[in-house]
Amino acid sequence: MTTPLKVAVIGAGIVGTSTALWLKRDGHDVTVFDRVEPGDPNQTSYGNAGLLARSSVIPVPTPGLVKAVPKMLFGADGPLFMKWRYLPKLLPWLVPFLRGANEADVRRTASALSEILGDAVDQHAAIAQGTDAARYITKGSYTFLYKDRAYFEKEALSFSIRAEHGFTWDEMDRDALLEVDPNLGPSYTFGAAVHDHGWITNPGAYTAALFDAYRALGGAFEKTEVDDIGGGEGSTRVTAGGQTHSFDRLVLASGAWSRKLAERLGHRVALETERGYHIMLRNPSVRPPCPYMIGDAKFGLTPMAEGVRAAGLVEFGGLTAAASTKPLDLFRRTLRRVYPGIEWEGEDTWMGHRPSTTDSLPLIGESTRAKGIFFAFGAQHIGLTSGPKTGRLVADMIGGRRPNIDLAPFATDRFDRLSDA
Ligand SMILES: Cc1cc2nc3c(=O)[nH]c(=O)nc-3n(C[C@H](O)[C@H](O)[C@H](O)COP(=O)(O)OP(=O)(O)OC[C@H]3O[C@@H](n4cnc5c(N)ncnc54)[C@H](O)[C@@H]3O)c2cc1C
Image 1 (cartoon, protein in one colour):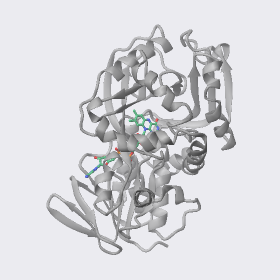
Image 2 (cartoon, rainbow, N blue to C red):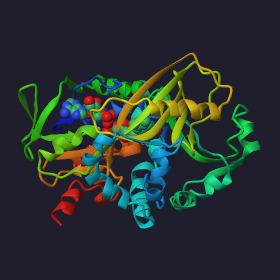
Image 3 (cartoon, rainbow, N blue to C red):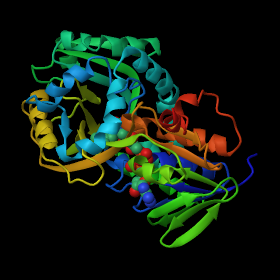
Image 4 (cartoon, rainbow, N blue to C red):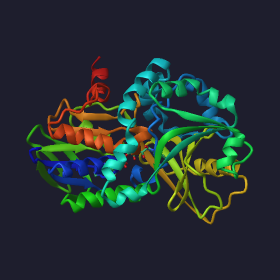
């Protein structure tokens, strides 16, 4: 039996909501702080591709990335975008990020990520069990679509590392692809359908439903901007709206906005926003049978409750710059290549902020500088997938239960150590 504690959670995205729900199930007295309602479009957890991408253990920087960047940025259908005025601010993050594009680092990152992603579909089922959120979870394959086998073979290292971590897939030629998706355009002749995945058919509503379950257990919510945090064990504090509140424990789960608050504790955190986009097609004439990763354009295409969502791409430009239109044009062009005859009745567009670290790993665990304060942010492209497990790990730590995975790769002070060196 866990001793009940008074706990604050800052952030009500999928990570904060999952943490709060597991803490509440453990019997703690929990208050969540967020400036927006759970499920709001301002949360990254609202607009993602919905993939429970348990095999996405491969980080974005892989061998060959540095050479490929010019084409990705300037090529006709390049999936990378940049707000150039932001480049000077980005460089201190970008240089170590790109330095990770080597096989040894990819293998190290994949091993760490597999610990928090491997059982993700079960983790989602467990957190959603008995709540309205369960109806948004669908299980199935996750298919990488390629123009041809040669494209797939360019990713041989990534797939061989996936295999080493126990992931399996079916290779599909054009006939096999057409059998399950007769509308697929002629540009795509090869696929890899990775087994035992899942997806969320409405990510915003899913987070909101999990939050409703937390509220139903008596969890409190303060809709406010948090200006400051601090303290140590037994006396952590949250300052919001000119008032300071005291808690026994505090969890920082503020996604891409976490750096400023973490730095108030004296930590250095190499966190940037990898901005991403989505376009939601309402009433499309065609739906994919399962989520696709469009190999050449680097975005996901997911059948959802409200339509079909194309989501992904990467833009660097910071937290405050306005959304761009070019990524949306790329979605539209590529969609017509995937499904040449596709029509849709309307669309919603969105831009959000992936919380990304230079080593592509989240920070999970207790602050070394402020005892009693726990970090749970930085899960870049896979934060929806890893959210419930992250929440459970943090609830375990707060409850005095030792997690049975090696948390060293997620250490909260690993960027401090780099800057001290
Ligand atoms: C286009 C795109 C596609 C993606 N696709 C996938 C996918 O298919 N699968 C997957 O696993 N991941 C995907 N991701 C990544 C995933 O969405 C994120 O990693 C995840 O949503 C992060 O969750 P979070 O709870 O950390 O952050 P958020 O959902 O952003 O929540 C953070 C919350 O903190 C609040 N907050 C921040 N600062 C303060 C403050 N000072 N005071 C009060 N409140 C504050 C914010 O208001 C916000 O509600 C995708 C991301 C993008 C952009």
